Image (cartoon, rainbow, N blue to C red; front, top):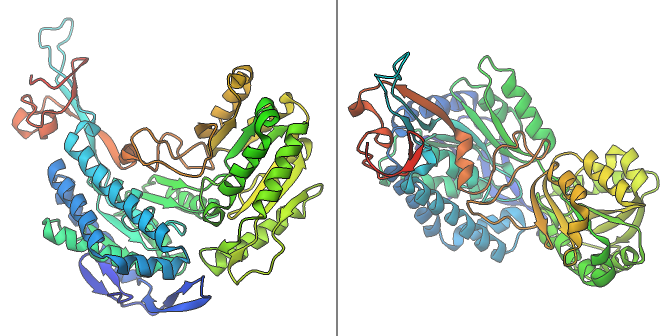
Length: 527
């Protein structure tokens, strides 16, 4: 049942005076539920509870935390079709997308549980004492990763499950041993409350401390600002716009105790199509990218918003194919009227720039909140001169940049802002002739794709979902996969500490049987 209240730990609360509703973009009407924005008192109480819970939860064993994460997955699954129905009512996304995203969310939680039980994520390192070393004895030092503290997780607009209440950021922080406070996204607050109830049911069943999880409603920026400034909070996770992520990053830096903000802020995901690939299969590549640009109404952070190639007959054929194929695809619904309005505004701004030519634009009458897909083109020198053309347009839009030479293409890539992904479309062995270009691309992205599309982010240990600023605020970390746990830990060393007081991961007998670095050797053996 959706109450519209906040979860302050395991207690439902609605002390605030600001009310709001979610919106069904497909039917263009408000949903039936009314939500209460968290008050300052509720925010402070949630943060204080999280700090108290941290003292116990951060010391829970990997096995115990894994039990909690699996229980969360089970409880979300037990919500059944009701969760999927609310998801679709609040997002306009189809049931199949809802079911797929739920599956990804459950998979993330369970993969973190497995990761905790395997145990090497703590990166245990032991250098034993050598009291007879000359000229000075060597002390005993033991190091491992420990939890940072309470984390604020901001729900994402475009993934109501996989990047929100129990999504990747939440799962990673909980796995690390950090209590979390979710600032629920106002566009899918009902979905968020259902998932929050599942998390708290799992916490009760597995004996987690009250305060390990809270869920706060908010329709503006004030709740998020208060959370980031609260002294009990030790890290922030955010997925959204550059404007929003940068504002949180700057705010966190002004605190008396600055804290890290791990923000993933979008990308235009450049695609480079090499000459021979265009010469031999321009039509097929055009068909493929028409589908990628419009997938999910272009509302993925990995949408291919920029296509780069050298002028040629092949490029002309590609442009013709892409333009004709993209117009065959029906317009689809965006997540919210505000997002649809922003798409139209940003699209018009880009298309009104000097020397930008529209190649194809859906001119059909569409329902409210449906996005008309667009492909435009511009010359390489114009793109270099106009930073406005570098900005992400969240929706089914892509810009084809026609370069006059390989040198100009390399220069454009070198001048790009940081991106989540870069893609290279090549014929067999063709890419061997463009190593300098590839190195330029590697320096600007977090993940490079060969002969594929950027849309789609596999959840696995080898995935890197991040990149140089402004794709993310820290290119050393990923927001997807089990390695994302590293954002919410810090290394900690014990010197000459009594063995019986050490964490199990660092004790001589290695009771957990994990792989450790002992005096420079990777081993599972006891000392």
